Image 1: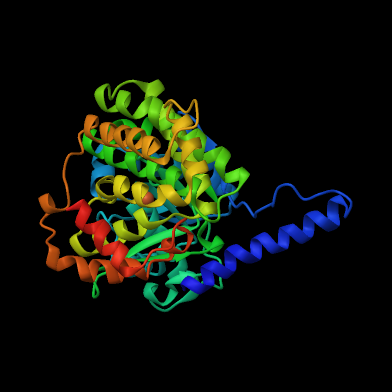
Image 2: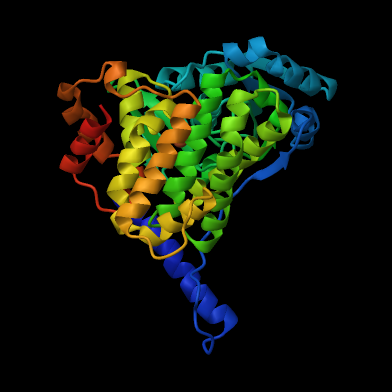
Length: 414
Ligand SMILES: [Fe+2]
């Protein structure tokens, strides 16, 4: 799987390098390698969620599997979407068996519900777990077998049924990404499925839906968005195009996360965070991620912890580890975070400034825990490191990572 991702990245560079030489002319110097950039159609803005019915009808849907979770249903968003589907004459069947960190058996139950009701489209209303579960359902109903058959990069041959996503958090960006993260419950590990086949057909990104998140979920999902943007910026597969999105995302998270946690009703800040999440998603879906996510997937799968909080506990340590390998990109991150980048700062000075700021941000939004606070012991680290070492996100980390490096990074995060 790791080799596949590396080849995927290299091929993109080669293909577009050839394209630019042939298409623009041999005489011109290639100054910027082009990269493939995949994104779904999306509508951004307050009220976007209410477009679900019209789009589902236009896609030819007659019976939609609505995938959601109990918290989002209680908040009322799912009912609003179901109502607007019905207004357009589209039948609905609700599947609400999704939990945080979506499990393999939940995907299989959802696929069974899809077949039982003879559905022909999927609408996901919820956070990243719900959307990843919906992506998994789409894979299984179109390709058969078990969701764990599709672990890895480009393993899905048949495209799924039409998939519309309505995110209710501002962080995971699963609604625009080529990634689905599912828990392999037998092995207590999160697996990654990375393929263009699971990019949703449409994302309806409505900042209003994020207003029902509690402050801690707002903080965790916001730090997840920041982590996406930072990892995409320093990724081996970053490009000028992904940098544009990633650095804008960092600016938006810096401007809005603290504000939205302290003032949850500030709609301008909610909109800023929703946009920041989208920008980060566009970046990481195309540049991939790094060691923070590899370690967070291993940790979250083993201990069933919130993904954003896992990232927050690990992020500063991985940034410190990566800084020597990607100083120029970290300088851009510092600028996007409105930190002082004047003069020729040493790596030591940069490290102190940027780590202080990341630590300040996570604490001010209420994320204080370390791995030890969640019951992680030194004796767990070996297994966590082995699982993280197999995660495809590690391929694009800017600095080569060995098992011992991962063990040290987990130890530092205890
Ligand atoms: Fe993430």
